Length: 280
Image (cartoon, rainbow, N blue to C red; front, side, top):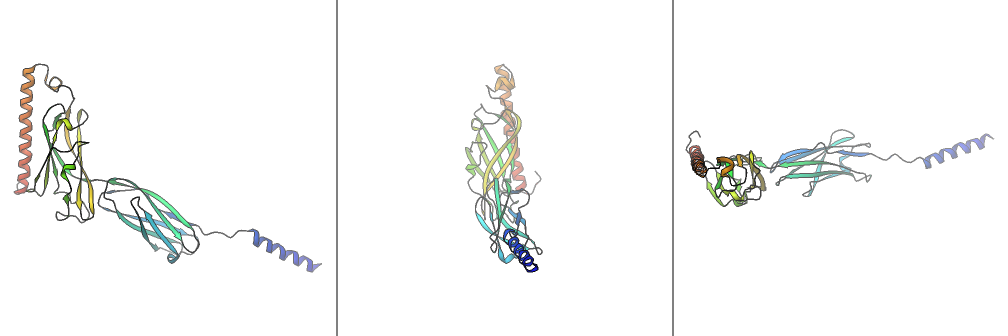
């Protein structure tokens, strides 16, 4: 009788060993919060990963999908069950990119993924507009000064390795410049001339945005800058701003033209003053 009881107990243990599943290792990765960087400057991802088993970096592999390509990532062990995935990438074009960090345990076959968004803003260019009043119905030309001497925000960049790729592609909305000139006396200034009628801006006071690109040793990088401008409500232009009398309108137009020419001369003098070491 006692022998039979022992047999049943041993059988019960055997059944339990078969029915209860083994606990699988839990591999996790946390890519971190969303990031914002400037075009042409590197962004470094430091993702935290952990495993319920003893952390063995030799059995783990990691990669990062940057949306523009995939690269292998370094894994550094922090303690017995935690580590850090490290990878660096440089985006040249402005935009928002989804980044996926993937870690795999090659011994167990477990895979863990996590994502974050990287927003890439264009490098900032200093922009000055002459004249500061725009009548889109006129046949005039607006001059935009874009300083390239200050494009030193790129990591490790300098005058020797930053240049303009194609100044004719600097746009205000869909408008490209009718003429392009360089002034290298003050370290570098683009002088872009746009036809008023090509500029599609909303009426009222505000800013216009100039977008373009600069060439660096890493590639072509997005650049943008804003300049203050006041837009006259499209119409005949004269009655809206100067009154209904033709004589008054002509006088006002002559005054505005003289003012615009004065602003243009002053801006050019300021650029030359910088080149000669004078205060602007």
